Amino acid sequence: MRWLAALGVVCSCVVSTQSAAPHASASMTIRAARIFDGVTGVLHRNSAVTVTNGRITFVGHVEGDVIDLGDVTLMPGLIDVHTHIDWHFGPDGRYGNRPDGPRETPEQRDAAIAANLRATLLAGVTTVQNLGNRGDAALRAAVAAGTLVGPRIVSSLGQLQPGTRTPDQLREAVRASKTAGADVIKTFASGSIRDGGKLNVTQEQLDAVCGEARAQGLRAVVHAHDPDSIVAAVKAGCSQIEHGAFADDRAIAAMKAANVFFDPNIGLVLQNYIENKAKFIGTGSYTDEGFAFMERAVPTLGPIFKKALDAGLRMPLGTDAVAGAHGQNAREAFVRVQAGQRPVDALISATSLAAESLGMGSTLGRLAPGYLADIIAVSGDPTANIDALRSVRFVMSQGKVIVR
Ligand SMILES: [Zn+2]
Image (cartoon, rainbow, N blue to C red; front, side, top):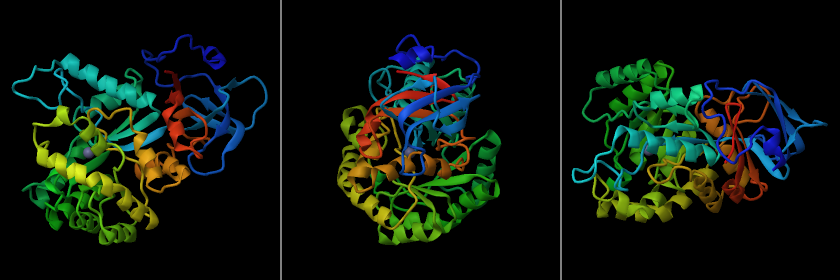
């Protein structure tokens, strides 16, 4: 490809991985047949994006000698607002530490996580919200410094299970997460989908977590499956509801009235568990009964999503990607479109709306001057056919070109 040479890329590989500088310093102008800006459904035709020092400085028509990617659509990098980027299968090919299994070395663990990060970025996902554990802090820093190839990481640095903790203890835990550098608080209002997803905390506990998060200037996202847990989380003033696999009209109405973000995960996580059942089964709630819950839930998710869509909920795209699912994040968008969302709205949910849900709407998720240069190109026109997300042809992360 001509443009590879123009960019100074001589092999079909990831470039600039060893650079300590997070940004390309030179100015670069990239033209494409189409540009989707992340916000509007009207594509710019034969336009270009100029990137300088890691930021977008211009979007519009240019003449002359620029890098021309040809018949592709340039768009903001995808954002996945719910991942578990560190989850991976162990040396025996299975999930979880089994007493009878081989022990994983630190090097094997690092390599597996690095592979997840790379697969995710090369699939066009330039930001993930990882929900999350302590180890994310080092990954977040390494990606930001340009020493690790992967999507920008926003992390909860842990998961706050209310359990039997008092409201005061929970408030203290939120403050400790903030001190440790968490970008967001991840908490729980219900059990796992594999246990039926019933409300398992008190209103006072949720009020404490989400109230203290707000007081500390942090968002709080809440795992909640059944209607009671969703309504309680909304009442507590939490920022975003995760999953909602058993959301009903009452729960959807409560989310709408409070205008909270709803991140239903309908296209990847359960399907991936089922596809990889043999690798998960045998630990924790990964039992035959747990899998039966997930298998029953899959066909119900599309209709729940459609109801939430018709109600006008703000639904950023999140996958809950676990072991085996990394790099397949776009499946969430395909299933959304199958369930009735317009392709352009699925794209917005994975770009500008997702950025807004992260509180980063003024810096991420759009191709516009002043925005961070996380840019991808896909074949075809994804606003007409969402399947175009299968063919990511170009990835720029933090102003640096990454190529398959
Ligand atoms: Zn999750």
